[in-house]
Image (cartoon, rainbow, N blue to C red; front, side, top):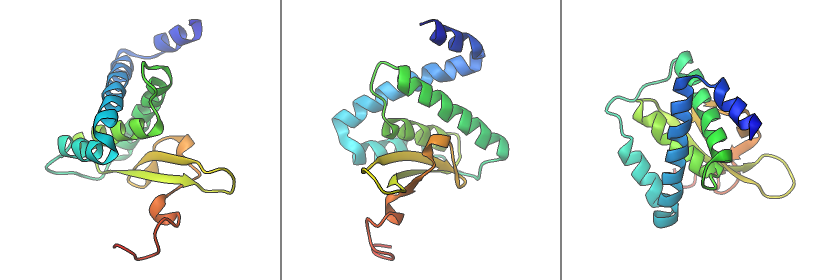
Length: 151
């Protein structure tokens, strides 16, 4: 418990508020996924986070989004619910859209041989927000559908 308290004290007041918001948001996302499932939850997130004028992110906004993703990752490890990468990514996707940015939510697989590993992550202007998101490729590039099918 001492290390967690030290970590909490190392955060400034804004980071603490954002961490608490992430923890609450992840709990809501967990419940929504359990009740509505993925497709309806994603539609709900996208409807609720619509912005009239989405724009490209500045370098400062990308850095801020990476900091938010880091806080969401902390909240997912230490929160009250099991917050998987899908819950965290849906939360980040909605939060960034609400701020008027154009994040892309990806679902994909590990990019190397070995056991199957699925993952969800968010990219903002082509940049993955967390270092742990590297090494995955989106399903539409992972062979889940032939090139050009359904496009």
